Length: 162
Image 1: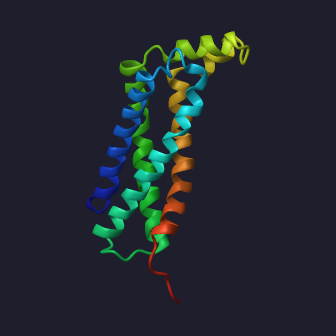
Image 2: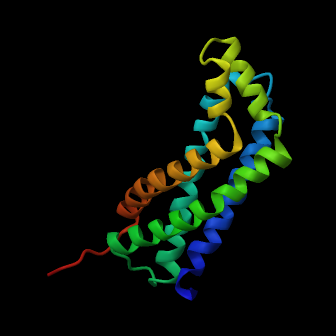
């Protein structure tokens, strides 16, 4: 486990950033009066997420690989980071939707029904804690792996020679 200390540290930082972003969204009104723009604003978190992956893999390169890292090494580190983030995702979603913004699902259901985006039954089955935990787990896994591949490409500084 010691060789994954950096990934665990950054997974915790990432999770705290997700929670802080939720507090920001709530403070700015994206969980009630601006709920129609919530998805667009949430997309901006991708910039934060990419930066955190960059800093995490750079930290691994600098402190574990002593400044010399192949793409594969960075990618594996990013995948391990992704696994730890994914394991923490249910906890962050639970905190967000029970302590920070318990009104989120009700407001989103109301919005989608009023705008005739979904019928109420569909909205209720889609906008609930269990559904969001499932969605965010799969999203974290897929996007995390892609992000790890991209960031590792930019941070590699040695190639494997055969």
